[in-house]
Figure 1 (cartoon, rainbow, N blue to C red):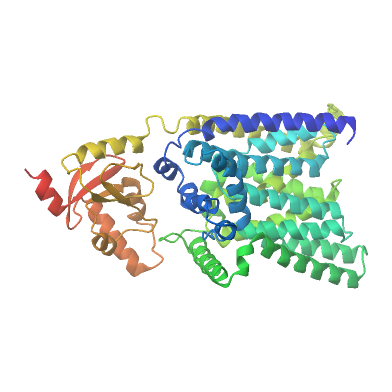
Figure 2 (figure 1 turned 90 degrees about the horizontal axis):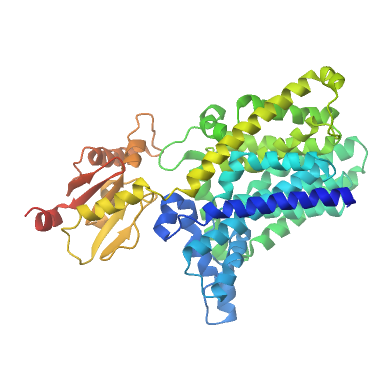
Length: 529
């Protein structure tokens, strides 16, 4: 790097360090116990035990390796679980693995924040090479996207997936249609993205575009292109298995395929109820995380312009060839979640940097000649301001999310309402978004599935703690069950719960957060005196 590039890179690292420190404050808060983690983010709590088991003490080296490789929670790939386990391994050595707030801080910072910063820096390098003032400007803009901040606030696989995507784009662009070592390195990182969350499979169009351009522009013979394509597939296949070594076990492969099928069904249909798909249905979620429609159209238009007239036409072509299949898949084949679109939207947004001149000076004559470009810049500036306002609000909410939290207060009120129960063991069902820490004498159980009488009667719970919002969601007249017969039973239960008439249970307390029920025999024995 030139001295100028080194100075800009140092500035970018300083910005990244500041962000890393800043988000550590809310990431260290509101994780006092597992119930609090689960209440705020069930997707953090669900895989945590499996990840910690990977580094649990074992009687032999062979068993240690088995713990580490066969983690048995195959909704996300081995790269996510292995890196997470290694991130908290020092805490295991130091005897702090039971310090849940510290564990969650380490996971959020090292598995979500750090890869996100690295991926964004890669995009900045791809677009400007750390050569001009545009690099810190673009970095600041990408950091301001609300979806980026939201993803920094939890432990999940999306930042690692995004980093693998950014590396794949980097290697494809660096290869520059030579179909050499960088092309094969792109196959490796594409495989890692696929192994982590399957998203790498959507690179088929970008890789196909590179091969097509190589043929049309006569960059290589058709024999070399066929060989390059086969080599890409072979390297990707080998790397995929290497990134998910449990696939070498027949029983683990079977578990993985079953999980894949179940997860695909959930994503394509919904969790108990049918989730609407398409741009219109996704817009209420997309809008607050990614910006106004005018801004998104401007970003898409600039990317097309970059293919036509931009200085790095291949890069913009690769980004669009990646963006299109991912977006179609997310919008029309799954239900939209903000984090799914991160690896597609952020590379697209990075293309906006070509609106800025390389030298920071105002040329009024040039502005008049490029009026549309100036207008789009104003749109982007306006969106940046809206992003910044949203980020400040989100940061404050996240930092204080446990303060006077209504679900935490509901727990205290529920305990008070259940005081007549004896100190002896009682089985308690609670909705998984509730706050329910370890409570003396309570044996707790939750379920991610919709409730129905068969489940409640089979478990014979002594106490039911139900979230009011969950009742509202499933009694919504617009809700359609994936299994109509089962959903009718679900709605029967939730309707009775809302009417305070659950069969076999006595209603004892309700507020806007939730409801408390006690089994009829316990109520007659301890409450009806």
